Length: 169
Image (tube, rainbow, N blue to C red; front, side, top):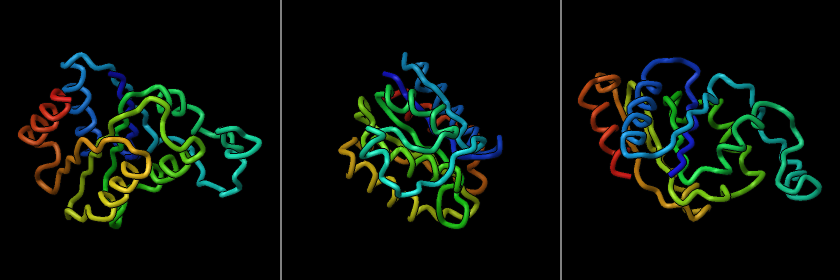
């Protein structure tokens, strides 16, 4: 299975450790994983111009780093969204990418999706609701949400839990 992980963290800290644990677990089970560091990319917000659904035929009118993630997003069998929680929501960088893939609607091949979230406070409700809405809207199976709160971030036990989760896909 081809897995695309959209890592929305602009830092190489807690979320990066979760992404790496997921990657290791998935690859140990024979899956192909591509990590896309959207937290470090320049992706503008959606303009709501609807160019993508008219003249653009699924392509966004804006030319930015979204073009770097679309091939992997389109070709993946599974999409994983990963982000720290900043004020109750995923990072603005991940939000921009997540909203801009609206140009194609559902990824062409993806049948599964997962969510990885890290936080110091555990305020995950809004991000989880958004992910569940995405899965329902696209018809993609929600295979799970992994969270790491406070001291769990980068703990060996939590990283092993994430590896095992990914290895069982």
